[in-house]
Image (cartoon, rainbow, N blue to C red; front, side, top):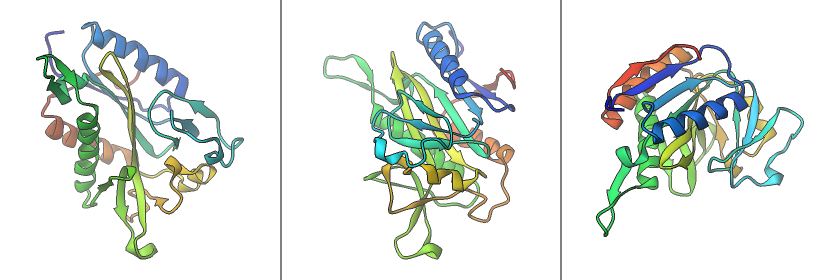
Length: 234
């Protein structure tokens, strides 16, 4: 498509995980064929666990607590549920994080693309006065918690993507106000020495609508793009 703007879709109703994956797969194919615009889709899932390509069986501590979905994204186990804003990104990685090879061909730089997603999350948190940080040995975005002990850090956002013909699927999740106790059924991303947190857990009176506004503002600035509204429900 000639229009280079990116669609921005928000689903108010909770979206079943299998439905979301099917939609992403179809949309990514359409984008790759040039038949649809790139899309960022904000939603909530019902409570569930997902297992990435590096998930370890022993990290699923309570297998009967919630449905468990094997997924093709990178990473290990994570939790999704109400109060957590999931943003699925169906984006052209070559467009946003491309590099030219020695042969003169344009390809995608996956690490650079993941860094863009990290910076997007960090910029979003900054809108609420929260300092998010990344760690070389841990995925996701973290906040320091000196109130919980020396060296303690909690994870506030997760990242996990998959590529299909250089179009990204899956994306990020930001803990706004989920039930943090639901993370107890897994070892989140295989990390035991640190915990999880949310914007509300940090004492901020923030709802999903507030997070959505901050996410969109930070996305447009970090990716240097224009977004256009899609239908509010699908």
